Length: 309
Length: 273
Image 1 (cartoon, rainbow over the protein chains, first blue to last red):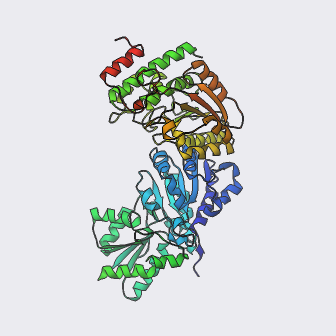
Image 2 (cartoon, chains in turn red, brown):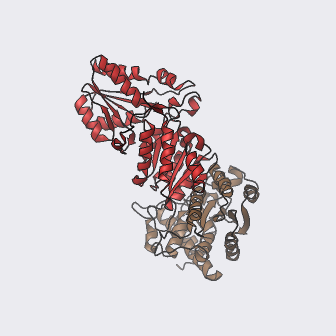
Image 3 (cartoon, helix red, strand yellow):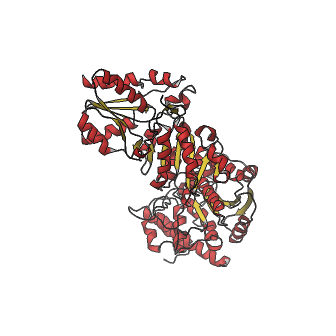
């Protein structure tokens, strides 16, 4: 039985393990219980700064702390990070201050709160900013490891985590996870599915469906949207000749956009992008949203078949 | 400690630098630079604990020019106090120059915060104040805000948070010149009783004449009071102060003087021609 867990729990665990570094501080905007920074707050209240419901201020308090040698981790819902975008751009990315933003409850998978809470453009907007590392891990183990690795990057970052549980893929495989390096989960010659976040496990399910039809696909967890693992994208484009990207995010500007932008200039191949088709979500359970918006495994499998024909 | 007359003379020299920069670039923001300059001279000349030979010294006081477009004032000060060279001032708004249009910590020594978007500096300075407390240091965090700038909502997020966190080491100087980009603040967005607003948020408040050096020095002493509330010096100023045709004139928020106006400004600032 596959273990199920939420990526936000991996974030909370990472903060606790990072606490031995006395420069690590945590910033909250009234959602620590949800983003899971509360565990850090309980243990290290003197290094936790409540910013109330004020995300714009929180981001720049982080910038001030970073400019004085601290390593701030600030979290709120992915959608609420977006109101601090200009602060992120001008106050964090431009001076290249190592403030780490975590947006939890990202994507339509967050479910019944409805479209107002379903950030489907966060990866795209943060990806446009110079200096910013953009992560969207698929399970709690990789979230924990990637969050801990962020401290070594010495630059700002945005990490999207998810509210709901998903299959854990990396128990015992921790050493395969590195910022900027995609992970190959299975190899096939007919097409490559490059996925991130919640859709990595959907991509693996799609690969099983396709295998039954005699179609062999590569599946990659591209947990780092930026910097994109261009070497890996190029090699699978050459080996497989067909690419499907899959993300719980708008098809505009996210992982699909990043892969397409790279391939069009380097090794164009037939491609399909699984993602939200330029619309908003609505209230529904997580799995219902993936079906409604064409993100679940049958849709990914169909995209591969379409490319084969 | 410099005498008041010495500080006033430095302010006159800084005004000349400001007008020169904007005239040479034929762009920039003279009005708010001239309104803030006496306050900046007082701060750097009497209070701010910084070291121009080691501008990144960890335990320095921090100064954040939140109204980052008023950069000529900042560059004039940085040249006066030896952070940059007098010749650097000619790089204002010039490709590759350290004097970027808006103050930028990546480009210019002595600049702690890369400003330009209004309403951001107080939050950043608050982060510096929290860091000082975590470090167990008595260093202070100073931030210059414009009055138009405090129309930005995020300023009040920070104003509330700084009181919640009892940051007595956080000090605002408000350049209350009454003019913003398009027009007088009274026309654009009436703010009513500005000191009462800060008092209501829980700040220690003092109102001064921002062009009277004696009052400025008294006000800076007021900021040094150590209690658990952040402090704000609300300085009544005149936009464009020191150049007659720029004074209280919204047109010179962001415009350069022509040749004739430049000559007049220099005469008024005591430059022999």
